[in-house]
Length: 276
Image 1 (tube, rainbow, N blue to C red):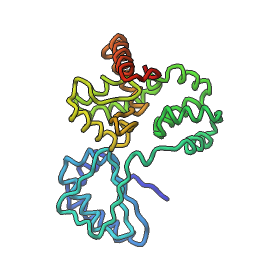
Image 2 (cartoon, rainbow, N blue to C red):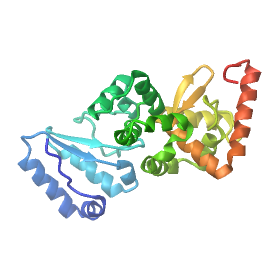
Image 3 (cartoon, one colour):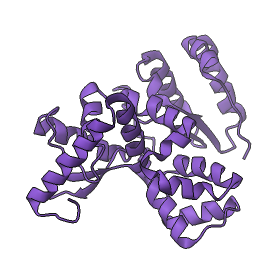
């Protein structure tokens, strides 16, 4: 009920390294507040996993804390506890990112809470455009609070809608795209004009492509399985807009037109005339 920022990165970096400071501090917290429900939140925990001392301290705290303490580790990569971590007395619940995605009903409720009045069809369009990702919906809603006419602008440029949102663009660049390998980036660029991705591009062999696609699906953000039998996927629309815009700037519109033509020929070969 009363959130308190214990430490920011620059202070915490020096603090946790000195166990003579860190461990007594938390021991005092545990002793004095043991009768209260406490939640310790470690954001961007993936940035710390390379630091063994940091992880060792956090794991020690988790094991020594009273049962009224709860630890939330937020990470966009898998968290691996050390072999010294005794999970016997600890209840660990893993929540994947896809579990936080909003339903269309949630999207409508969020917009109502923001006093943004839209037609049901417009709410459905925004839910589809954002894939229920709250950060993307929040970015759009801030523009809609200024003027509802912005929705028409998004509809007109839906493929590159991310260009209207520098902060959202920067977040994807820093938190998602920068962590991909060059091959994975090429994989997405090679398919950014396609509605449905079949991971068989020239830049990756089939095994590597499927391994990347499966990992992206498990991450709950990059790709969504469309047809597991045919092993086809659809890219998250916000990420797709980012990749499409970036590829257009990097390789030019002619490259994207060639992609469209290649995709059309593939659909024609399969007899899928509608997609063609």
